[in-house]
Image (cartoon, rainbow over all chains, first blue to last red; front, side, top):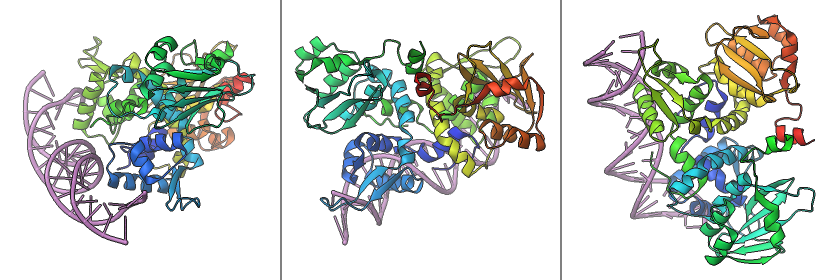
Length: 220
Length: 220
DNA sequence: CCGGATCCGGGTTGATACTG
DNA sequence: CAGTATCAACCCGGATCCGG
């Protein structure tokens, strides 16, 4: 993309990650840690393969991500975010928070369960930060996701745990509705949600009452 | 722009404000409140006039901004953000925080003093939130800017106050360096910065020690 | 001068086919 | 699996023009 050529921090940021598809690639790596080329094609559906290759080159040159030759089991290279790339997490969280209402207006299009991770990080909080951490496994057939308490907050990532405190099994969109409080637990159960483990973990990980103002809540 | 057609809050947000120039238009309206078409052309240098007209239409349809026919003195319409548009402020602040290091690497390109406002909001904090509010006038010849304490935070906006507690007069880039701590006050004075008023206001509005973690600082 | 609309050349995107 | 090559369609940017 052409540079905006403005001496403004926002414009400079957009010079790097403002190109079409770029932030979605970062989203993918943020939630999935390390991805092969094919993982990215699956996680960013709709991108043309040449554009994905171009963008990965751009973002690598910009220091947002890097490609590693191979961890021994696999015979291919993987992509992962640098420290600088992970520093984009707050940007993506704010974008997710702003975009969440649009999701209700039009729930169409491709769906991946782990995309809801950023939403969970924004909407949910750990109501008992003093207690030992808990982890909830969201078990959709494809694309399992983990929610865990870290530091008084809730963090999301793709994957499957050995010993989660609670497992929710069901359709991805159903679990998404549950996370964003559009669906009650009882309703979700009726629609096919299965749970196994400690429901206390689910009560502990709950939306903020005060909307989205962790700092203000902490000060009060 | 074509929709990403992904049922993901980030993708949905980018469907609305991911288009080139869009976030820079929002930046402008955030910092300057209400702008005429010409103000926007000046505040977003480099944009083609047809694109500005297109984007304003798009963003109005999306509910991010609206145009008002006229406040009586002027014979033209002005643009301003809706509530939904102002809700993009956290996104822009995070982008500004992420882009700030890039500004040091390459300080070239067009410059407007008020662009530094988002940077100030991110880097500075009110060290004495219990005290009555203070306001600092940043007085560059063109494009004067105000920093004021609101609610324990620092807010920036374009304009000129009647009775600021402190006035800093000088080159915009010099003041920007001062705000982001690249230049000391003594150095800035040598390079032509003039001050008038209470220096206590400047000591009160100071960078966080703990980097950028207001919530963590509040909890500590 | 302000607030656009229109036109046009060139660069980018996106879909598909192809290759190591 | 991990890309590269190709090509049409679209979008961007610059210039120009026009009504108030």
